[in-house]
Image (cartoon, rainbow, N blue to C red; front, top):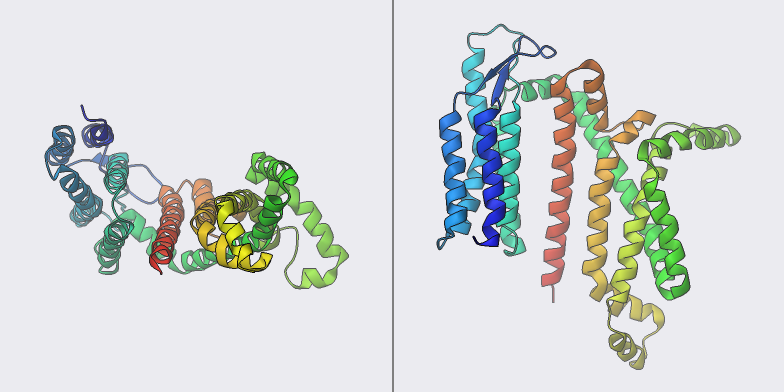
Length: 374
């Protein structure tokens, strides 16, 4: 069997198992109680995954494109199918009834997403961006048209629209502030570590040690020192600087973000051939000119890869910052866990995942655009 067909076979098998063994939807009396499983499309969905597996194993000409297209259709079609079922179920149910998505839906949707990601690997960046942006446009258009309104997740979003938008903006602010500060601090630190070769291991070692500290523990440890600073300098407290809130959260997030920024800065600067630097110096360029005109342009892809990792990592870690009053999308995750409201947990979790994927796609687009520039 072709090794390239193995991911298709594994993911299609997972999708087949999800269609056959796990509920597609649930029908619950309200947002807190559990309900009855509902899986009306077992045969059709299982057949779709069997077709995908067959295409992957056969490996006929054009099968790669066919698998990608079918995975794309499943990603967009599964929510549409679930919403149609939810509309039908709620016509005869009580007003408080909810239709949450089941484990079968999520496993199939995840399998289709991973399958599309695998099939798009190796193709041009522009083609990948078109595929994912097109998928996003279709899902957003259906959402704005009210297609998903009958699903419990959409009803939870409409009930929490105001706080959700505020949390999303706060989350973006935390991530953007962290990224800017990490770049301002980490890039010069990485350049210094690259210049002073003997300090490279020490700097990276200290930053790597900080990565081993659990995020929740680090957030908790910063409460005391930041509260003391706010008491010692009332001006800082007047600006909102205290033991809880955005200040300790951003500080901790920057500490976690410094390691990839420093590492990729060192790697990017080191990737420039010594001959190129010597040629630039021979042309009369100063050290700053060599850095700005030779090293940064040539090392830009590596540095951008580090920023991409920082951005995605920060979006995920910012969820934990909710526990010290920083706000953000983590609020829905922890409130939902406390209330036993799975839809609220899923609302916050999916928003964080979608935001991380969108940022990752944005960095891919920036890299593709800058690489094409003359």
